[in-house]
Image (cartoon, rainbow, N blue to C red; front, side):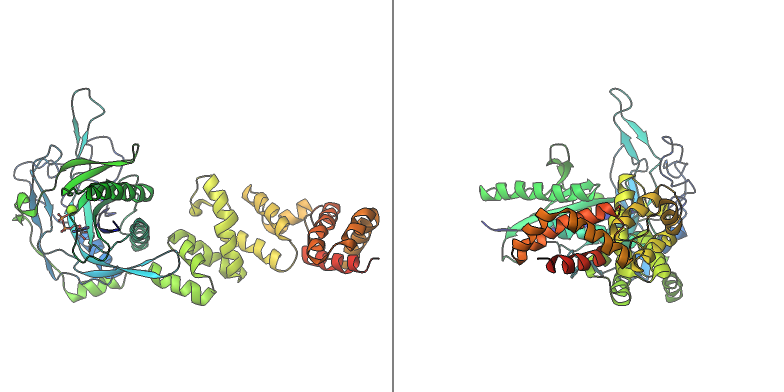
Length: 483
Ligand code: ADP
Ligand code: MG
């Protein structure tokens, strides 16, 4: 049978506020257990929540970033369930009236096309604490530092048809929220967690199959793998005439399988009701416009500008723009050297390579945009061949100064003096009679190959400093005039 996979994603995004959503405790990551939990987070009787306005502002910012409708009156609800890491016995969330209503998110795919995903809603809620199973023998510890951390849960319609689309969406979402500055998007620290709802149906069918929900997948790579393995599992069941049980599953990265965690609750089980300790959030158009005024240029607009103003390919723009710092770096380089395409090539090639090898972000690059621009200027004006430029780049990475200093101290200037080049070419030809005879006897295609020998010899004689274009032209002229 031919199965089509259908998916909807729920992303829990930790908002980058200083303090928690309903208390004054710090929301920073990495403190010792329970250092950042006060009486409100512990759910002590009589404690009252106070809404963090920054969390509201960030949620609205997100809504505007995806062109969604902002709920003019959103309400918090209690979602009731018992779990050791939830001392109050309920999570404060938004069920009936979320702050961000329906929107549309355009996801760029690798081929440069845009793929629209419908956003169902995004709502504010508090995170729960964490059960710790590996510190005390036979006992479970509870860490409430995370309790009350502000989350924005972003829910899509079931619009995904492949793992590639799901990963592209998550990457684009990651890029958007870091541009907006509403989250650090750090997946390994849990700032962005993804639940994947997966169902299969016969190709061509219009009805949705029964879904499972894979909880808390925390890297792009695992998202892709989890989807593939869940697809295989469901397809096997359906092929053999079975039915899918609606349930929550966990992805085990080590075994590359998903495992059943619990049967799926339905909304009724949670006995949602309005949170009586918090007022509804009323948002007027003045507030919305004030937030809109703080929106930066977003990735979609920047991609368009980079292709139209700088003439970058969709491909280059799609690699540079998602990383805010890289996009800024690129623009700074271009400002100095006015050569966008070489700037993109150097940033995506040698610079990214060196940064990756050293596990550094581009913000930490020892080569400033101005210095990289200086290198590009010297390539463009013919001082440096691409080979010499790589040497300069390496020296610059090691802190040997700017391009002109390195060229001077290392004597790396490209030889573009035609008399000097001619003398070298003549000498190589005179010293290689056999190769010359071979060359002259060869046909056009073979000659191309054989000329490499002569180029190599001259390059060697010039210590790699011969201007390659001039050398090639000169060499061909001389060789073809032999006989
Ligand atoms: P819940 O509140 O139980 O998590 P929702 O109905 O809000 O359930 O849906 C959650 C997510 O599951 C949404 O992203 C939605 O698009 C997706 N979804 C719903 N039904 C299906 C289905 N049959 N197959 C795949 N995804 C689905
Ligand atoms: Mg869900």
